[in-house]
Structures are given as C-alpha cells and as structure tokens.
Image 1 (cartoon, rainbow over the protein chains, first blue to last red):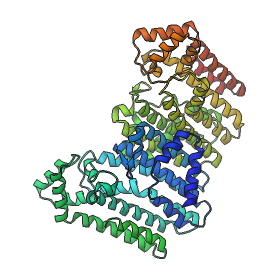
Image 2 (spheres, each protein chain N blue to C red; image 1 turned 90 degrees about the vertical axis):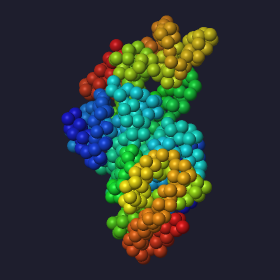
Image 3 (cartoon, rainbow over the protein chains, first blue to last red; image 1 turned 180 degrees about the horizontal axis):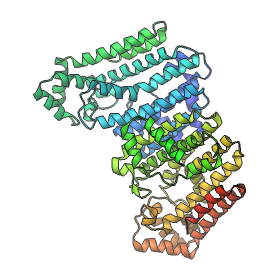
Length: 295
Length: 295
C-alpha cells in the first residue's frame, strides 16, 4: 500500500497547486478498499499501484461531491471539505481529482481505461437517482438495488475487472466478485446506519431515513406493516426523528427481523463472491472482514 | 455541425437516464466555438465530430459547475440549471457529462486523450484560483492572465492541438492559435461585462467586479489612479454597485482608457493567432468574428 500512497502523493503533487495539496491532506484516506483490491488482484503488475491511486482519487472525488449533495458535515469522523471550506471548494477539488485521475488513466490499455471511466458515469448517475428517489418514500426493492449497484458497486466492480485484465486473470469472475462485494458492503453500511452509534459511524446515527433514503431494512419493514403503521412510517420519512420515533422504528424492525433479512441478502451476495474467488484466500478475507463489520 | 449535434445527442442518449436527457435539453448549446474549431481543423477526419462532441460535453459540464460556484442564475440568457433544479442537480449533471466525455475520449490515440483530459485539470484548477483570487482585490496582471489561461484558454488550446494531431497538422502552431483565441475571447468577455447591457449579455451587467473578479480594465485602472481613488475602487470591490458608483468606475475607465488598453491586448493576442494561421481563412475568420463582438 506504500507504493499506492506514493503514487497518490505524486499525482496530487503534479496538480501543482498548494491549495489542492492542503485540502487533499485534510481528507481521511479511509480504508482504501479499492486500492487493496487492485493490489491483491494484480499484485505483480508494475502498473497496479498507479491504477490503485487513480481509483482512490476517483473515489475521493465522488465522496467530495456526495458530501456537497448530501450536505454532510462529517466524513469518516472528520469534518467534510464542504463543512470546513465550503461546498464550492469541495466541488472544485472534486473536479480536479476526477480530471487528474482521468488524465492518468490514458496511460492504460483502452479496455481498462474504458471500464474505469464508464463506471464513473454509472456512479454519478447512481448519485442522481439516489437523490431523486429520496424525494418520496420508496418501497421498491429492485429499484433500490439498481441504484445501489450504480452508486456504490460499479467502481469496485470496475476496479476488480480492470485489475484482472491487467493481471491476465478471468475478468468476468472478478467483476462479479467486485460487484457483489460492493453491494453487500453498502447493504451493511445501510444496516450500520441503523444499528451503530454516532461515535462508531463518525456521523449522525439513523441519518439515512432523515435524508430520505429508504434502505433495505425500511423497505422490508414497510412491506410487512399494517396500513396504520405503513402510514406512520411514511410520515416519519425525511423527518428528524426524536428518541421515541427512532425507538419505534427500531422496535418494529426487530419485531419483523428486517435487519436480519437485509443482512441475509448481504451474506448471500458475499457468498456468491466468495464462491467466485474460492481459490484466492486474500480476496475471500476482504469479504469476511467486511461482513464482520456488522457485528 | 449537424454531425456534432448528432454525436452529442447519441452520447446523452447513451447515458440512458431520462432525467439527464431532460436537463441537457434545457441547456443552451451556445456558440459551439470549440466544436467549430475542431471541425475546421480536422474537417476530413472521421473522428472529428466525436472529438467535437466530447469537448462540448466537457465545456457544458464546466459551465454547470461554474454556475454553481458563481451562484449564477442565468447562462446564455436562460435560467441556469442550479437556478431551476438546484445546485446539487447541476453538480451531478456536470459529473455525468464529464465522465461520459472521458469514457468516449478513450477511443482516441493516447496523446489526444491526454491533451484533452489534462486541460480539464487545468480548467478546474483555474476555476479554483479564480474563486480564491476574488477574495481580495487583485492588481497583478500576470497573476490574472495566468488564471485566465487555465480557466478559459486551456480547453480551446487543447481542442485546437488535439484536432491538429488528428489531422496531421502542426500541433504547436494550432495550440498557440487556440491559446490566444481563448485568452482574447475571455478578455473581450471581460470588457463586455463592463460595456454591454443586461439584455445583450444575458446576465447582469458589471457583475464581475461584484463577484470579486478584477478583470483587466480594473487592474489597469487601479495602476493609474491616485491614492484616494485607489482606496475608493478597492472599497467598491465585491459591492453591489449603485448607479453613481458604476458610473464613477466607467468614467474613470474612459478617462484612463483602460478598456482600450485591455482591448489592445486582446487584439495583440488575436493578431499573433492570425499570424500563426495566416493560410487558413476559416480560422482567421473565427478570430475576426470574435474580436468584432466587442464593438
């Protein structure tokens, strides 16, 4: 991973603007999941650290714009750039990181560059669909999962597929692995928003529903509630919940085991991914660590 | 140009999201200066319409984000997307257009893709420098021109250079042409902000200085004013000007011929560009039309 951090630092340095260096240094790097994945899949390839750095810049840019769009004041436990330096700065920094990443992508084979670049269109589109969906209470599971795929899974899928091509490995199996890893990762993130506290999350708890996001536990809950409770749940959509309201939701979710049901889907997707990569202990390990986050 | 519009429509269609199609259709296409330039330089090349469409998508994306950052409510005489659909939508639409353009860019030779992609980093950086510079009254001409080059000229320079490579023509001469066209175009735009009325501009007149932008006529004016008037000018920086204040500025600019001086620089840059392209009547014609805008 040191080689990746060095490549990231070089790319930021090449932007040749001290304000960019300063702002980027304030970002928490996060888990670098996508970079680790690329290094594990294409470990021996000399271009792997650069590809990993490019994907991390793209991911950082997408989070910068996400935080502007969601008006999030915290990211990975530290204040977001839009909170400290304003949303305009966050938009501009995101644009610089995106375009620098795309510029570097040009040095790769066309199929690899195309896979990564088109995943960014998918994730930007996913973000837009996510925002539009939040306007109304959504109880359509398929619609939700389609959005999740675009918004969260496509970049991980692209990272896995592109690094498999780089390493001369089976790209469609790796794409499946990345896609399911991304989906189950996000489903668990959605669960943690409900089950974890603010300190663990590094952001307010039960915030998704306040933001209008009907994640799987809410979708599953809606389906099993009676008409009166359906109405009550919809009435709480986008509302800043008081103690009693959030307790009611959590209690109903416990009663109807909708967290468990969501977790089962995450696990099913994760198992498919493990099956696809059963000969690769490291890739299986990433999935296992990820699934464990929810305990 | 019909082939370019067809390519643009195809790329938007490929985004496969009706919300993107709807929003994009609301944008005014503008003069399509960059596309025209590419077609004139690489007219016979089958990839020219696609390159032109890509550059126009990039330009549209940068304007969407510019308008968010400048909080502009009008663009080319029509309400901006941030005004009609909110700044979040404008950010997301911009990201989709940028990434779609980059995805298509991959089908070009690496040198061409790199020139276009890196110009986007330059223009995003230019936008950030522009915003930072607006915090204080800037009287440094070089600093201003450096920013102008990044923000406005690099994409036109890249369009000219890349299409020259496509057509097997002299790329550095065409790059010089594009750079100087971009710079003189923007200087004239800055002049028009002072001399034209709201109807002609399609946005409020004398708005640059209110936004903190010290364009050349202001920089030249500052240099020649006495200490008392220097202070008065600085005091008006970022202020919404009343009739008397804007009259005072215009009168002082007339007195010291700072509009003329700015125009002379635009003309000098334009002449250099004409000289570089003296055998190409069409490219010379673009410059002449552009310079004429200021009358």
